[in-house]
Length: 144
Image 1 (tube, one colour):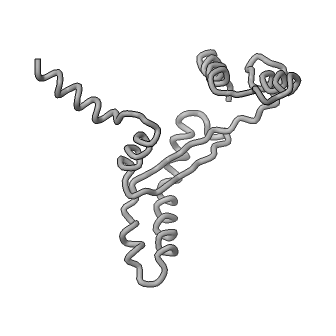
Image 2: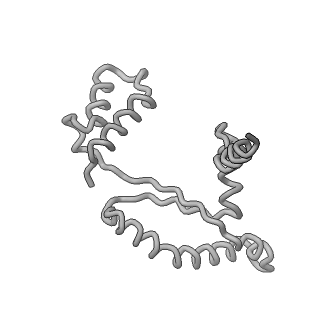
Image 3: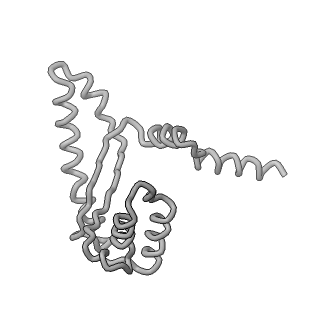
């Protein structure tokens, strides 16, 4: 998979904004930048891996907890069934995007509520909730 010019510029911007090289020696700093620079000599030595976090609403928490024998075992069983059902859909989506042969690290997390997880995460990092913002703007627009 190769990067187009827009993606390359985005990668360079990410490196410029977020990479702290202050603790490196000048030689190590040059090597790191050469490795990350899409136009640098070290770039072909990179091994790119896509990381993907997928959280999904999983209503089996209650039934797993109600299990009389082993809640953890029941949860794992129910999660495995859901993942076996979902895996082909994920594979198809990767294929549709032309990245079926790209290495992808999937972090698939069943949660009681994705909306609640998203809201808690956004609160933690100080983001405003987009749905709330949109509703407030809509409400304010109607008061003219």
